[in-house]
Image (cartoon, rainbow, N blue to C red):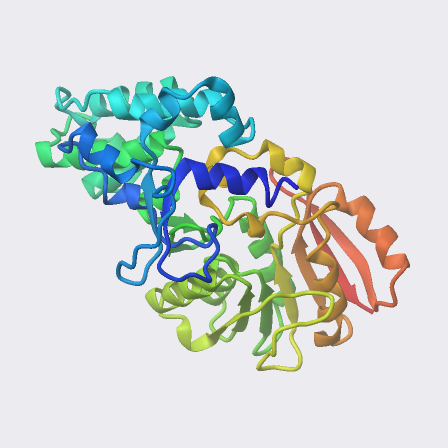
Amino acid sequence: MFHQGKCNSLQRHSFSIYRCVKSISTRQRTQCECLNSLDTNKSESEYLKIFSSQENRVQPIYRNRELKWCLLNVNTLRFQPRRITQKMFGGLYTQPLQNKLTDIRYREYSSSSSTVGESLTHWTAKLEDSGVPESRLSAEHITAHVMGMPRRKLLENLRISVSEDLYSELDRLMTCRLARMPVQYIVGEWDFHNITLKMRPPVFIPRPETESLVEKALELLQGISMPKVLEIGCGSGAISLSLLKCMKELQCVAVDQSKHAVSLTKENAQQLKLDDRIVVLEGKVTQEKFPALPYDKFDLVVSNPPYVLRKDLMGVGPEIMIFEDMRALDGGKDGLDTIKPILLHCQHFLPSGCSILMEVDPCHRYLIPAWLKTQNVNLEISNIIQDFNGKDRFIEFTKI
């Protein structure tokens, strides 16, 4: 099966994973060591010692009780026969990854450019040559982060000189982008709706279209005194914390199956000074069980659940496949593995006339009504909302 087979194989052989807790899955990592361990002054032989044998490719090393990642030795891929390399990666991204990793090891770290503009041109070309999407935008965000200024201000000051120390830091972070680490993880934070959130792997990165879900939720909550909202699958806390920022009387309960997501949501709530109005719980929603909640009734249930059809997971890029928690995407064969339990359980938490607002795959507007007819649920589809790309992305269910 793709989710547990090829994806695990790709992650396992793309990086050397150091685990500090034996029970932690290889996809439940909290930090990528390529952000802090890549030293351009080290010789190739020093790196080869780390990856000298197959037995040491995955080894338990206890270090600050955190999960660490380190870049795989480039020569492992560069000099292996093509058929072995394809077997390691399950036939996915074989040649692009091989070329990209070779470029990371053998490219020259140059500080010949002296201004922000020249640096952006240099790194945009590097990223484009390695097939990194949105190369110019990636270079701008990372450079702005290194320079300590907003991207807009950076673009207004392209003639500013860049010091040697900043070039070294820029090399380090751009190397991570060449390895297809998402920009959000590299800079460590990202703007969503009306807030700025901390970001770290493997917690799911909120997408721009989900901001429309927040706007619709705010519409549904208008006129309700002291509203309570339940969010299923909070990730970094983007939806709940955006709602709390906009509504001063709102109380939220956020649930996620990932302890890394729960931890990050709590951190973001504290950073935004919203932690006194949110309860964050770790728990998995299934047909058989649901986490214990502090309230019996809610005025709105909102969720951006795993809804990607398993067949479509073959099309995700390495930024997602290698770094993000695939459990936040994998909705099973029809994309409804998590959506169905949410609807079955959450109908009991709503008074009559209140809603469940959910982000879905466009095909679900056809699949869910057929399934609802076979179930004894007091829900009806009251609204289907399109995202900014014109796709049927959100469904509102109303309690009858």
